[in-house]
Length: 212
Image (cartoon, rainbow, N blue to C red; front, side):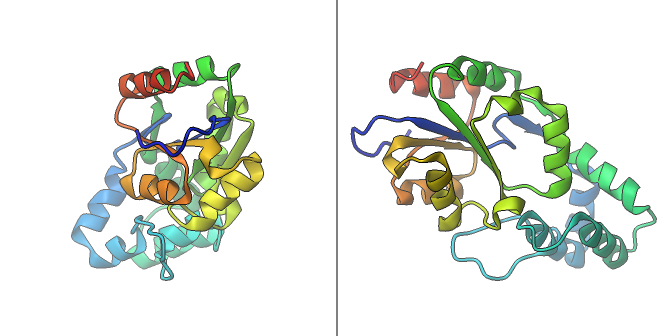
């Protein structure tokens, strides 16, 4: 847990994938990227703060291209014998395994105590599935996704958007994520941060901050 000054925390912003949502194996896409340099380039998913060159997947996650363009390009470039619908269904099914019940329980406990937000580096296909599948998404006072914001963590603009739309100063926000680069970006902005490893550690951190 990294802290800023003694300013009271009034907003908690959660990452989704790897925190509240269990990630799937992405077996088909990982296997393609592992043996094909072209696939690896198209499917690169490693945002950093000062990035200006984006992969096909990162462009999709930033909303620069829509679902039809993404899956059509992927199918053409990788010569996949799948319809666009089949490819999208596999992309969702293999990437999202379900929710993290322990973290969802924590979210429910926090709900009456403090304002809640989420910011996910995601894409239209995943976001649509998440909103339809997980009823606890309605518990957030503010839900943000990279493809709708046009920015991704750890870009500075993503953290600025959280504060602007959450109506908080950075020191009033606790940011929870499982990726160190995102944590470092939020900390540089002046946010309280927690690098997620388990629900047990998160609960202890929240108790330490006297939020739970």
